[in-house]
Image 1 (spheres, helix red, strand yellow):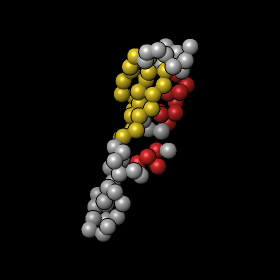
Image 2 (cartoon, one colour):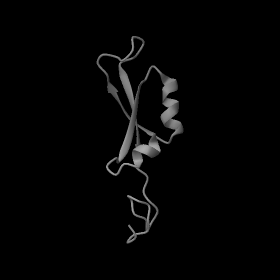
Image 3 (cartoon, rainbow, N blue to C red):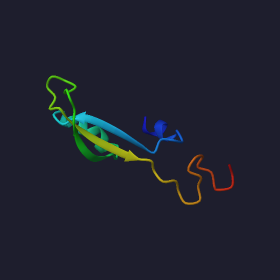
Image 4 (cartoon, helix red, strand yellow):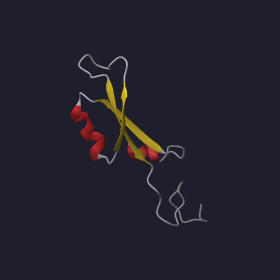
Length: 79
């Protein structure tokens, strides 16, 4: 999913959220290189056992290698 989303030219970052009561869900974004950027109140909680606090994770679009086009991955001037 990450590779497909970053293949789209206007996607600059991806976010994943999960209820803080579901700590094991934090393992997915952590393993994929996402960074926790905050916690937000969710009204009402998404599940009856939820805490009502969403943990928000973000992964920014990787920078292309120097001399590469950010869109196509081709050397500059060769599009």
